[in-house]
Image 1 (cartoon, rainbow, N blue to C red):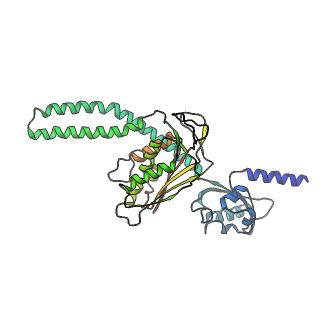
Image 2 (cartoon, rainbow, N blue to C red; image 1 turned 135 degrees about the horizontal axis):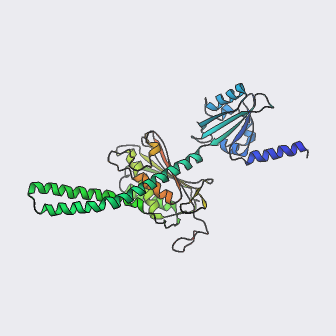
Image 3 (tube, one colour; image 1 turned 180 degrees about the horizontal axis):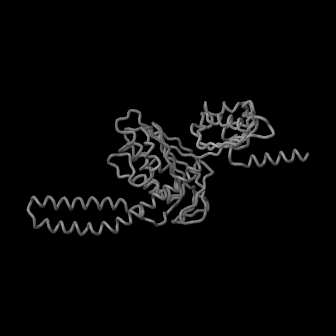
Length: 374
């Protein structure tokens, strides 16, 4: 083997080792080369890609095509961020950062590297959601200590006054007691956020959890809505707390049903599960990094979340409902964060999806009762 051939083999190995799709585009716009990540992104082998022009692989009028022309004109590299290259071939939403550079030795040829935004955005949003959960935790502790005790004194004083006033004033003392009780109930709901005890986990079949949530929903608030399931039957168990996971998905399904409304004739909630390797996060209270390959989605065909609320959806007291407290999704964020997972929301009209990534149970993991994961 010649030195030149050896150098080419090394270059190909390095290119294929990159996690980001990289393709070469000729002066005529044809794909001339690509790495393994590019094959996965476009869901076609390199031999198939070479038979296509790039414009056939990206959406019509994609900014990527204009960037390539700009690079050819300027003979300099150009970057563009958060560009959607989704097509029916590779999925309907593939947001990427694009890096285009000229190939000096070949006139008109450029190299294109794509960096998918999905994982980075999930990490950023997860940190935000955990911060929101911590802020609710601090607020809950403050409310419990600084509000409930004075309220108890106010209510006691009102009850003493009630025995010595006339009927007209007794209405006011009863109002004081009722309002004090209402505030205590709100504080009690908040106190769940201040529970910092470690979550007791064990191997949990997520499909059993989802079926339980579905039955609860269909017997009450979602009796008028059609459910669709797309489950991966080979999915391994989740390493989690069954009761808390039920609470998470019951909240999400209830939100979906309320978004659809009581009078929608075609209301539909889709529950899906899938195995998505590649995401790793640090578990709370440890330095070890844990994979989050188990994906569970709750999708509805309601009107969607307003764009201005979407970045703050998991913050406390943020809600789209006139009578909502805005604590349901904050609690979801806390529970998922306590499990070391990720929760995110993608929303557009008639397609709002809450996606949760969770750790799987490993054979070596033993739960609090001494049982090993199956």
